[in-house]
Length: 111
Image (cartoon, rainbow, N blue to C red; front, side):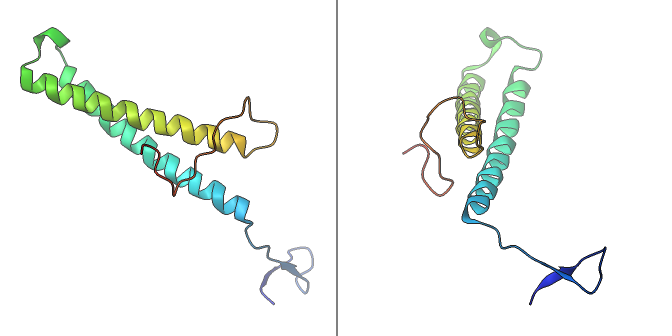
């Protein structure tokens, strides 16, 4: 039997519970959300650096293309984060504010 010692009674072992599939799904969603958050922060930083000390009208055509791409990627990462947050809230009883399609981390979000 696998388990942990009970601190109040060292002779008695506490049975270790196996994680439920629901917990595993939540862990996957959390991991995917953290990845999306990191991507969002990275793209947001690139957007800020492109605009640092300048206005949009002051950008060269090459910088404007880079800005558009970085903004597009940042917005996609933000959208993914929000979908994952909704999926996480939908997995918490009483936390959901509406019915939305549940996002699965192993499914393509933008296909």
